[in-house]
Image (tube, rainbow, N blue to C red; front, side, top):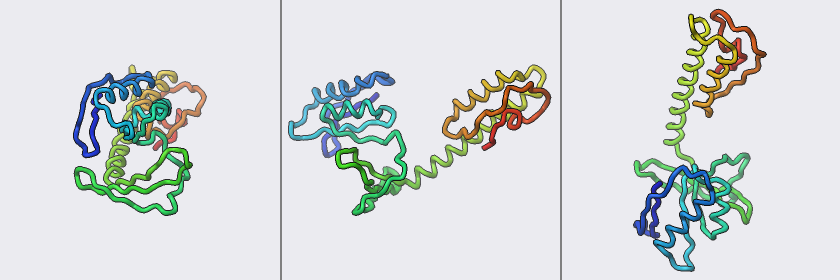
Length: 202
């Protein structure tokens, strides 16, 4: 994991390669402390820690706050039924490709975290394209499992078919919109997998 200490002008003051994929949430503040020791700031300045959503767990954020650090990250949970601040205005920024990104302030508790609504048409198009690809690949997995039922030497036992479907679900969790609600039947012939397993097709 690459860590950088930069000043308010965006210039790098110090860099380091830190251990990645660490499961211990307490390790993040220690990493930040180590970086701060290498690149100290004035006592009156508040350090802003910018982290990826992958390590922005509630435990890590709480520990950073306890250490007195501010932080900036993508929320790991989507806010539901939120309201925009009464006096909010839309601020438009541009990424490296000159694509517009709109920011608007969200109403939050006085002592809570500060949230922004981020709207990026370009990112929305990318996510929609990725979801289409995952949907197609997931349905391909179901079609293969279905075809295997009618093939000689194919997977026919109910438990094995369920395992196969579960593996496909694990590969594409964000687009799996189905449930298995049928009792264990004796699967034979070329019957449709969607019908036999009670699957609601996407």
